[in-house]
Length: 357
Image 1 (cartoon, helix red, strand yellow):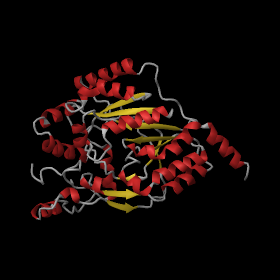
Image 2 (cartoon, one colour):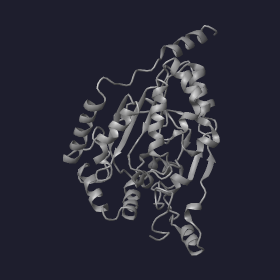
Image 3 (spheres, rainbow, N blue to C red):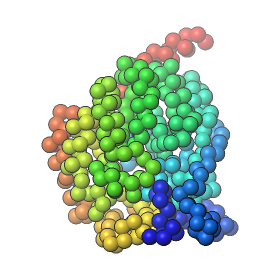
Image 4 (cartoon, rainbow, N blue to C red):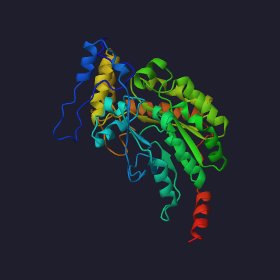
């Protein structure tokens, strides 16, 4: 496989055009071609961290397909490089491509903790769990450098406010002290993504993520601390990891997870082009079969934006996936569930503060 056929260490293999740019700059792999001619490795291309300054940080979720009500993202773009990631499309709003740009151009919100504190001090805010991530991983490699997620957890702990975390990175254990403090007051839950038990599959699907072994160890460590963990076995991709549902459920159950959830992969917007290009380069022998099975789950198309259907899928393949999921829950998760987080301590804080005015 030539250099231009597969870019090692990245998920997306190209930069498709940004649909919002009217006068396209015709984004091409010119620099990669230059590197190839000069015998330079494209994987050596550096990730760029670019500061941005949003006015707010907490986002209200209106999608009926998403259980959380509010989310916040310290970073836009994600170096993990998961080729299927639905968040890729949001990078186009910032003027970048959903492809390689999403993995290489990381937008950093240095004022996230201050904006969060402003929100929690607002008289109009009522306690609802705010989920760190929701779009891009709050413990992606940038967090090791900038520690913005840790700063936000310190704010949640200060105000005794409930918080959820979504991640696939063992870096979450760095903040054990804050997690334990939040858990003491029943203010924290963690959702750990585990997509496959195969390291070969993980390296192709999610090239810069924590290994599967370390993710399972992370679930165990958090569970041993008493922190409720939901394992996100998602997305399920027919022909790639759909055969692993029972084994995945058993593995996260053995590690101590309180529950698990699945979604069927959907390839909306630019992700369809990115995923199609990727699978023909990484799994050429099964590419057409996988793409056809994904389409079968979504009315014959890779794209599906219908609420209530888009993350569940439909048809025989989708029903088989959900039947296996139901079986796994009965077999490995009887009597387990995720608890409600505590809102009362924040309400007590607000009432005490209002008395000062």
